[in-house]
Each structure stands twice: as structure tokens, then as C-alpha cells.
Image 1 (tube, rainbow over the protein chains, first blue to last red):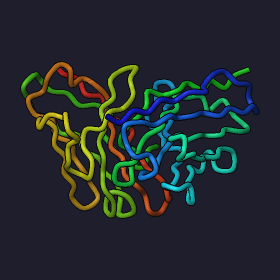
Image 2: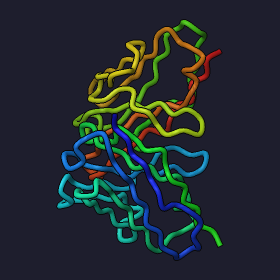
Image 3: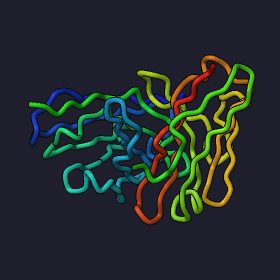
Length: 117
Length: 110
């Protein structure tokens, strides 16, 4: 069974940094692209970033490009999202997801990030 | 404004069949696979349909997906009260080099 568990969320001031982690199990982690998707309170799903199987390629939404960095450690079966220069509009539940045919498929339970002073 | 267009709401009586549409363009749905998700309040999205019309194991055959040109649809037959949820479509977009989602459809079982 695919299991994804996010951690690292919390309250951070505008301009601050936070690193989210996602621990994967139940599948061969190094065989899949991994995604981060966020959902602001009461809003829809918004894709944030994805990373290639071996970390050699990444893509980002324009809204986070230059501020967020996705990475992975295949030895630890983990994917990360380093978030810098955080803004109020980054407040959301952040989900990591395993790829299924190029699109997020299996999702974690999410980690809440609140950016506020 | 979402890149993929879904109706904001849909409804149906128990036992009925409901269809939710997802409209895109040649750079996303027209050239890539579509996934569908269901999200119950306060929970993470769950994969319902992948690769346009395939169901993961455990998803009932009441749920079906289809795609034609730049549009996709999710059909739910034999509507049940537990089907009340938000439903989203998603696809890769070649022009944006990213995943695009629909704005979501809130399904009400009357």
C-alpha cells in the first residue's frame, strides 16, 4: 500500500523559511516522479513542483519559482520542499503525491503551513 | 482562474447518474492523460480515475472516465450519499511545463 507522510509544517512569519518532508513507503520510491501540491483554506488544488526519479530534473509553478526548491533522497525514501521568502499567500495545506502517468496520483495526508505575523 | 474548467456544482438523487465535465486545451487534455480525484471535507484527495479511464484497485466500477479531444468527463452511476464531495480533474500541460487542475466540482446528493 502506498503511504506518504508529510511533516515540517507550522506557523512562520512573512519572509521566513520552512522545509517540508515527505516519507514514502509501500512502493519503489526511486521509480517515480514525486509532486508537491497545495490547497489554500477553502480553495482548490494548485500544483507546486515535481522532481524526476533521480532528482536530475525539476519543474515549478511560476508562483513559487525562485523561492521554493524540491529535492529528494532515494536512500531515505524522502522528498523535500524547501520554502524561502514565504508570503501570506503561501498559506495552505501542502500535500506530497506520487506520480501516476505524469500527474499526482497517490497523496499524503497533508501538512499545514501558515504564514502570518 | 483554473486552466481546466469544471462546473462549480453538480447534483443528483440517490441511484441516479451524474456527469462532471473538465474542459481544457490542446496543450493539456488534448495531448496528455487525465486523472480524477475525490476529496471529502478535511481529508486528502483520493485518486478515482487515472490515464483517462482506468480505475485504481478498490475504486468501484460506478466511477468511469472518458476523454475526447480537449475535454474529459467523470461519470458516477448509482449515486450514493457518501459520494457527496469535491471532485477535481488534472493533467500535465506542455506549454506551462506543469500540472494543471480544474477548479473543482462540489457534488450534492439530494
